[in-house]
Length: 152
Image (cartoon, rainbow, N blue to C red):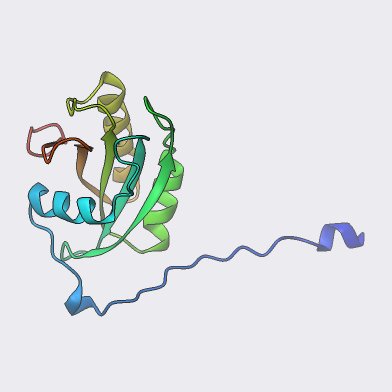
């Protein structure tokens, strides 16, 4: 066997828990999730579309958050395998996804609806609950919740 075949890259899977489980915030509504999201969102909320993932344990306590993607003014690319890989790394049993519309319009597009349905199907394969998909806008405190609207 040649030496080139013995050289491979190390893959590191890391989830660094900084808070004790009893100190994690419990999220029981879209309003509570929206409050967390407002606190973690970047100052580019009115400029660039971003996609953020919240991860949850079995008690609906928020383990943490991660920015999945950042795009331009009218869209961002989201890969379901990246979302699921992140959820699996954190041993999450539930996730909430969120993205912003730099415009004031928080109504989901057809692409938003299709993306949510497809991700829900992917999550079901791994027994991970897709709890909600929340759309925010930078100009207003309003938000759209797929779960509140019966679309999850």
